[in-house]
Amino acid sequence: MTIYLDYNATTPVIPKVANLVYKMMVDEYGNSGSRTHEFGITAKRAVELARAQVAQVVRADKTEVIFTSGATESNNIAILGLREFAETNEKKHIITTKIEHKSVLEPIKHLQTQGFDVTYLNVDKDGQVNVNELKAAMRDETCLISIMHINNETGSIQPIKDICQILSSHEAYLHVDAAQSFGKYPFDLDNPRIDFISASGHKLFAPKGIGALIMRRRGYIKPPLRPIYFGGGQEKGLRPGTLAVPLIAGFGLACELAQKNAQKWCIHAAGLKAELMDSLRTLEAKFNGNNTSPYVLNFSVPGVNSEAAIVMLKGIVAVSNGSACTSSSYTPSHVLLAMGLSQEQINGSIRVSWSHQTTFVPSYEICQIIKGLL
Ligand code: PMP
Image (cartoon, rainbow, N blue to C red; front, side):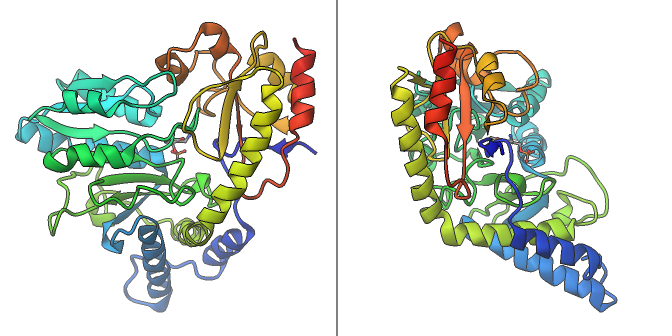
């Protein structure tokens, strides 16, 4: 049976989580907005428990959590939702990086067409943002800095703590796309300087179609986000629409399980990574990215094309050559391009990602197959 090694694309749902989702769909199916009967009250209770479970991951208050359909929607609400504030206050400058996910880059690009000025920070060959470059880019009229925590393609971990430090004397809002780290990598996201955090359920063993935007208050003051669409006023009016109670309950439980186990999960993942790296060194593989997540390895073997390797690895391991969103297209990764990798290294790049559920990475077999292509 093929071993699934594409956890950065998505994760299976933990059976306990799936059981809860099922129960909330079949037995406790009330609308959390129904105040007139116990079906609604039971659903609302489940939502509020989940809100607390999500908040706990980053030590936020439960009232600071907005449920969304996933990190794409959270990113859009955080970025486009600040537009009115930025325009009214003449703060139409945004800073982001060249390696963000498209769900950050595209809404920012949209604002750029609407008269916003955008600074795209570079990354070095290891995929790291330089905090001095951020410092130099800051202006009085900067309203938003959007920097991801862990990159989905390379796993590079951005220096969130240092970024928070640099921003300590500035009022600009800080948004962190934490789709790849929320709950799994329990560091830095509890920093109170982070105003917005985007999370995704399906990267954390909950179902697809659920996520959250955490919006921290500064003192008692809520961030000035405005809705980007309108409806029944749910989720403080920022994400109107009937709440997906079963998915929310499942996401909450997944967060609680992750929070309890993340340290252990990271140690297990780091062990798998070290073994795979050792094997790949025998092929003189180049590792794309440094200071990376324990859950992923992006590498290229000189002389090997990733498409060919992935075809040969089919049936043994399920891996990818970039983000799932772009792996169906042949456009070279904007992340690897930003890191200044050679065309050969980009064409050869293979992403392998795993989790606490992975018991075994067949490193020897992977290396033998790749060797056959040399
Ligand atoms: N940001 C990052 C870093 C991601 O990896 C992903 C998923 N590939 C997203 C955002 C989008 O998340 P979702 O699938 O929940 O919309």
